[in-house]
Image (cartoon, rainbow, N blue to C red; front, side, top):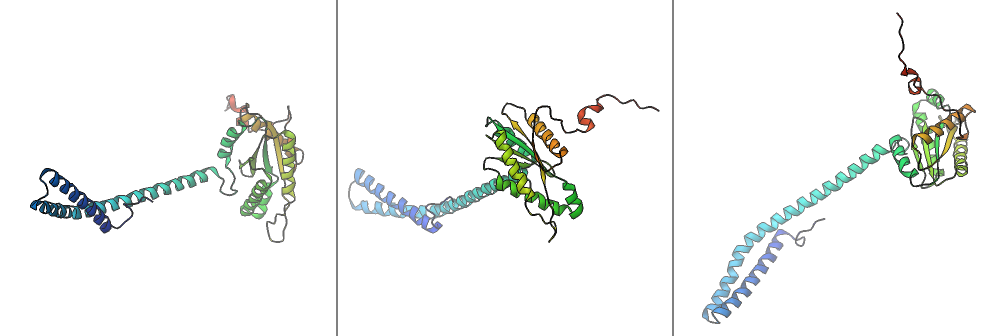
Length: 279
């Protein structure tokens, strides 16, 4: 808090200012009168005048200045509180813009931004893309609120198993991205298997007394700081597709020549040639 002089009521501030001005006036008048006129009958008259005039001037002036000072202090404090409130609001908005509201993980945009930053700081890293198996069955059978509970369960497992410097985000409906910095491919496979095993063996009850087994598929790839982001993302996605193709509920590491996930025709460039429409 910004304090007034020194955080006193206006009356006391006025008294202090007036006293200081009066003492200074009396001392200065006495010195000047004694120096130039000498000590005589008029000396005490001059001192009395020097005592009265500052009081007559300082009391109203000091009161006015003290009141104005209080107003400025209150205004400065309100401005400071408003600035702090705006900083808190901006921080909350930034957090909301970067965090997935359901799982509390980084959203897709924030995850990709952090991925670009973190991978440049590590020589060897592992990127994983994790997807829930047959998630549509949960939504269709029990409803989307139950599906949301499953996503929250995934999030809790990630937070429990992953290390402090690991990065995890929700990059799709039931798809998650994980970056393991300073991690070898072998270490990444161990962590991926820990995640897969934990989720498979975590009790999930969409309804009371009804258990539903949930599993995930994981595609992973090594990532170097010099690669463009699109390449490891595509490789991890291809490994994920291979895990799905092999029967799901497993972790697959990308190897050169692995079949890519089929793309929509408009991404694959099929529509680049004009189509002739016959009458």
